Image 1 (cartoon, helix red, strand yellow):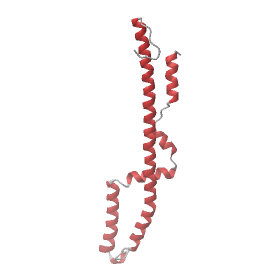
Image 2 (cartoon, helix red, strand yellow; image 1 turned 90 degrees about the vertical axis):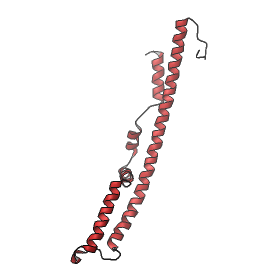
Image 3 (cartoon, one colour; image 1 turned 120 degrees about the vertical axis):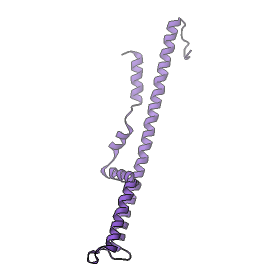
Image 4 (cartoon, one colour; image 1 turned 30 degrees about the vertical axis):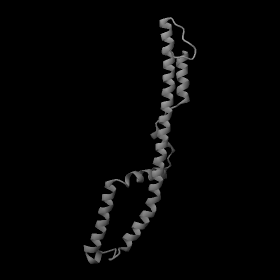
Length: 149
């Protein structure tokens, strides 16, 4: 291997790049994955629509359905109230954990982008040095030590 190829290899070893998504996904536990999924999907219109549909169906059945089949009495629907409270208690921490994990993923992506920029800068520096060396060879002028001209 030539010296510039060795130098490129050292630069790439110094700044290894990996997909931030893959790295982040590998670090997540099963509960973390559930939290991320919930954080992503509970804010979607489909989720709100499904929740509104289920709640409306529940209320309509217990108001207008056959009286003998009402399972959650008027006026305050205690079963629906209890289910709603328990759901909120479970979902809220998971959604917050999911948002926190998404924040970690963003930071990881920023770190990977920084590595890529540092690697590109060093590789560009190497290319400029090689070009200056080739220019010096073509023009017959010796390259001044430490200069790019």
